[in-house]
Length: 497
Ligand SMILES: [Zn+2]
Image 1 (cartoon, helix red, strand yellow):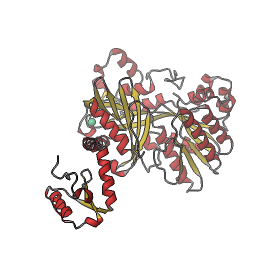
Image 2 (image 1 turned 90 degrees about the vertical axis):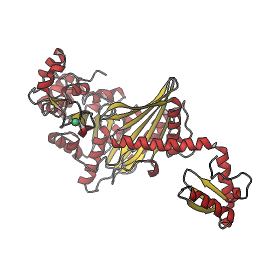
Image 3 (image 1 turned 135 degrees about the vertical axis):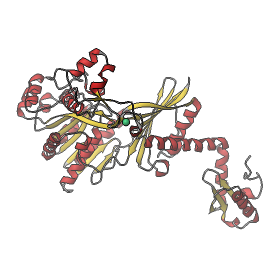
Image 4 (image 1 turned 60 degrees about the vertical axis):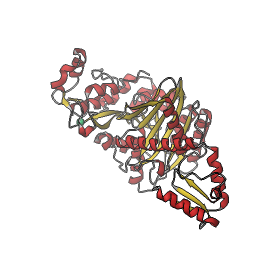
């Protein structure tokens, strides 16, 4: 028992209560000058404790003590210890600019901590099973925004940490998602960085000037829907965020821009962001999402952003909004710009609506490629020998061997990853009557051929531009956009859904 524990049954027990975790000494107002209290105070001070003294009603002391008894002492200490551990973990992830922290807790073995950095998982630490359980519980129960939350190992749970005291400066919040796995739990924490940019320029994401002008065309159309596609983690929401901020800036606040997001991730000043009400089941969530979209349409908007169209009702509402005098921006899961049309038809939108250039005003599909560290990348020509003959021939037939570079061994500047960041490659279709006539007839090849004749460039084309600029590794680019020697008449190398 610690030196400063109060003897049970003593007078002092009713007059003062010391909370070790916060260093707070609660003292009954009426006993502030009681000799017992004063000697206890100096005892604590002599131990080197930096005391914070709070004068409270005597009943409060009683309550504090009862609560303490309810939780066993060791639990409290472990929980606060684990919170400190979690804070350290957040700091480390922040420093390495990780996008996510994965905590895999397995009852058969151990707990693994992984960081996602530049889209790749990297194992950071291994701990015993019980340690992981305590860590997850501390994060969910003591640090998340939900008061009175209980962490349940066998349930899917969502949450968020937004209290400053639980975060690293530089983070706006941390999103928590957990799910049971066969022999334990996985908790994934998404770090929401608050420098996620005041910039409204999509070029710094990797779009080029010509593409920026295509976005300008879409932004000028008062009505119609613009859809950004790409897999999870392809940077769709950042592109959307910058586009909306640029609309707000360019119109000098004369347009009402409103979003429906589940949940809103980054604050966008000047834009009305509406969260979707809490829901536990998928059906409730879908209903809440629809209700939120309907509500925005009654709020006299000019521009509506719908975070994600994931089911038939939300897709219908998005199209309805586009047809009733709004400029709509949204995202969908599809593997190429043209595949967006198929996806929307799958979700129940008639083809002739999707083939109407006054309704569909923009189709975008993007991927993120890793940017090579400029300090340690290596010339392709000198290091081609390390790849198999097949790989080498395929790559060499598609790129400029003189200027291309491959990933290096890593250096201090890139924390030994060889990677300096990520860049977008995107394909953009701004439909017109001719293109949509081909789409309506179901003649995809003609539509693509027409698009390419009019200057349309695929993600693969843009990847090759960046490979030839020595900006990205050709092999890593293939992981995202498919084989570089893919016959270019089809704009969708990875569109096998
Ligand atoms: Zn480097």
